[in-house]
Amino acid sequence: MTESRYQLNAQLAQMLKGGVIMDVVNPDQARIAEEAGAVAVMALERVPADIRKEGGVARMSDPAMVKEIKETVTIPVMAKARIGHLVEAQILEALKIDYVDESEVLTPADDECHIDKRKFNVPFVCGARNLGEALRRVAEGAAMIRTKGEAGTGNVVEAVRHMRTMTREINQLVSMPDEEVMSFVKANGIPYDLALEVKKLGRLPVVNFAAGGIATPADAALMMQLGCDGVFVGSGIFKSEDPKKRARAIVEATAYFNDPNKLLKASMGLGEPMQGLEIDTIPQEKLLAGRGW
Amino acid sequence: MRSFSENPATIAVLDLQGGVEEHLDHLYRVGVEARAVKRVSEFESLAGLIIPGGESTCLARLLDIFHLKEAIVREFQRGLKLWGTCAGAILLARENRGDRAHLGLIDVSIARNAFGAQTESFICQARVPKVATETLPLTFIRAPKITSVGAGVDVLLTIDDYIAAAEDERVLVTVFHPELTPSLAFHRYFAKKCGLVAGHDQGDERLETAWTPTSWMQAANSP
Image (cartoon, rainbow over all chains, first blue to last red):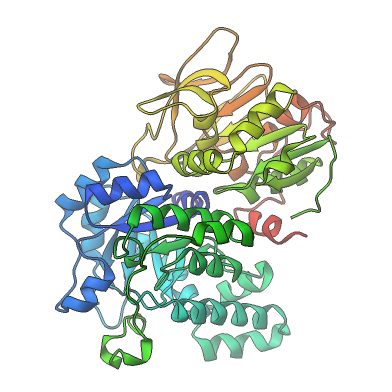
């Protein structure tokens, strides 16, 4: 990837700011998402809640199905590749997908290495729980970051934890004397040059969305108030009672995240949200956020 | 964001979704008063309004349900100047091919996402004589194409078989993103169109050397 290509990819993410990216499993859902005002859709065979329930190895979706969704909407289409699965990413690039999500929601293909994203022209978004993880992904070529949260739970607590952790670490870095930076990056697994850039910018050097467990308009606005640039909603929409209504409400809440009166209106009469999961009830080996190195 | 002021020398950026801070950063560099707007009450007494890039379907929906469409049309009739970049141009076009028109305030016909997927997004250079004598860097991201313009609309730039920038007396549309480049020429041009002194000499078209791709982050943090 040339530097100008990387810049274009980071800039596409900038154009998504303030928006909602929705998981969809078929063209009908994609159409509903687009009409509701989604800024992009994530095309996949099973939403995280079903992946969690059904178990087994979760892989890249059938490209025929992704293609069909691509032909249905004019907004950008994203798709997931397994962590470290460079060939799945190559296939998605050949399909001319707009963004690849190297995602912990799928079963990792490599338990040591992520994809070398600098070798691709297609842009990548990656999940992160803290500053070190976010900047390692950026160093590998990710043009956009998202919190991992705990996908498929409808429980926002992990996304909040990840966003607060990143912000805390950024603030530490910003207020730190220069001579302390080296030991801070060593302790936190942060690439040194990017740490210096973050220290200067006071935020991540790329667009940072919230993801993992967002189920209500209030959840989306919460993540925006915590400083995210936009939100991904996975299972939260199409696992709820009235997806159309909920999708619209989450778009409104994300745009007006600072306006309690509009949030009140957006939150009313949406029907049942997806059923949530208490994180403590999930066995350790079934937690997705720990995937990624 | 800067404090709210009823200053008629202000250019606002529609702050619903998309490249808001990028435009604010360029406007600050040009030296005009600028702020983000998203509520009906904030649209009064503006000299100009920029509708930024983002997703036109998302922006259109929010404009409709929050009654901002009426506010923009009302102020336009009172003399508000408008500039749409990329999705903003789609919203301003009278004809949106393959879909319904939205604001329809300039007589151009536009085709959405006319280049294909993100890997087809590109950067190029072109001369736009009416805007600057120097060659300008242009950034196209999943861009639309203007396919025709009506009488009374000036074409500012044609590339291959499509129109990339056009204007009439009150509305400017560009399918590319000047706010994503180091050039301030289009922002200065729009400030002049709004009747504002842009704080620079007419001939000052040099690229802004202090600009970087992360400059928008500072505009996002500014008070």
